[in-house]
Length: 400
Ligand SMILES: Cc1ncc(COP(=O)(O)O)c(C=O)c1O
Image 1 (cartoon, rainbow, N blue to C red):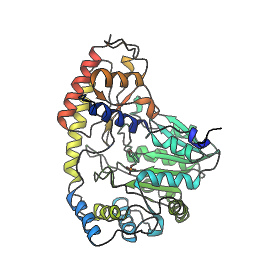
Image 2: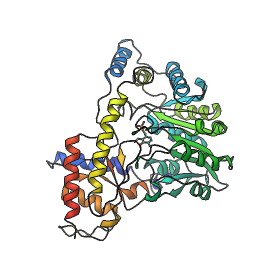
Image 3: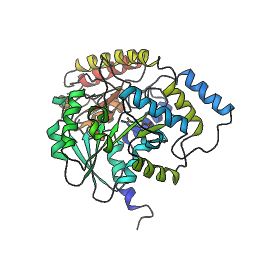
Image 4: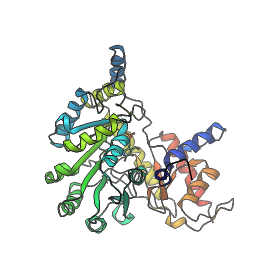
């Protein structure tokens, strides 16, 4: 019998983290690899946020805190929910965790029993299905398509719901596609949820601030106020504030659920890092002036990458509303052979050959539950993106 738990055998390590590690390995070995696989902004954390962290250290705010967040940060989350979405929350309805990842995980751990189902639209962020499995639940994947720009339709949601469904995980703008749901598109989904009162919504708003061309972000609890009592709205400072290493995420929802999440956190990590919490407080309450110029840069890069990829025969790439990813289809390249003799049987073979033969690291679509595609993160310099797109083009043109 294995020493390791049965639960662990049900999950796999994160393929995005594996690809980023592989890129670092090849670079360390002297290869000129361009990494388009990491899901983090290349910008530095804004100075006012760093200053707040330094001030917290100097003021001795370096001790344990309340398990799910300092009161000041919980108040700041309530103010943010009111300011940005018109939603009223009290601090007892807010949980702060070690990254958005931990708050999502806590919520699933706090609620799932054997046999409980969680509806996850595909392509999905790689961690959702595995977190559901770790928590003892069953992921129910609802596949979207290129035709709807990777957005779930109301019929698809209706079809995926069963009497065992506990959660619907909603992520807009999305990792890995960048797709953002308009208010009308989201309302069509919340209308379906109104017909199924046993289903709760976990809205992952991590890319809220990264949206382009005037896209108006909205979250389920504001679009359908009647869902307020069964919605957990999750967010964090990692992406918009370039704070991936600081590890602060938060969630707002019903008091009993937040208390259950607190119980898990108090028996696992005790509390998120005290210094990072003071930095996150400044992120939420301080100036938001850097968001617009950062978004201009992201938008320019998105336009460049989408145009460059769509010029390649065999690749088709929708232009998404937000985040810093695009998710091109390689349907037109399947079955071709590389100059070194590798057959592109699927998107994993494509990504491996692109890395080995053209020195560009991307993540294959199967990791996100929808093939044949690959994910490009354009959160990297313009020069690197230009060279990477030239290499992808040369590689695709070399296929026979
Ligand atoms: C959709 C989505 N949700 C949540 C997270 C978790 O973010 P973090 O734990 O860094 O706050 C990520 C990170 O990649 C993400 O892409």
